[in-house]
View 1 (spheres, rainbow, N blue to C red):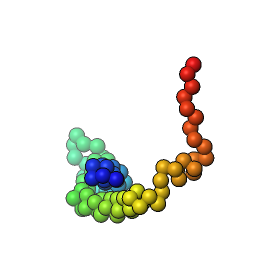
View 2 (view 1 turned 120 degrees about the horizontal axis):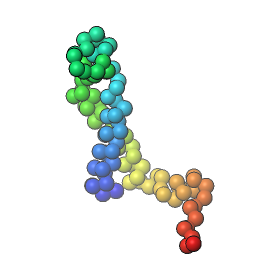
View 3 (view 1 turned 90 degrees about the vertical axis):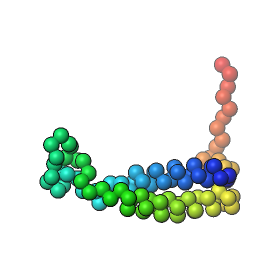
Length: 95
């Protein structure tokens, strides 16, 4: 795994984790009873995005370390995944 692929893996993990962390402890305007005119009741009032970004970075870092070590050590390879799937894909036939 090169530097670029490592950064791409981290970015993908970070955004997937961030999308999972955002709704945790989210307080909407409807929950607090302070709906501003012209906004939806589901609009966030207290979102704590900075704290959630740091939490996301920590979780993504741990996940990245686990996946990077698996990739770099070769503990799981494409051949292992192929044998788990059961059979290889048949080549395309010309009609």
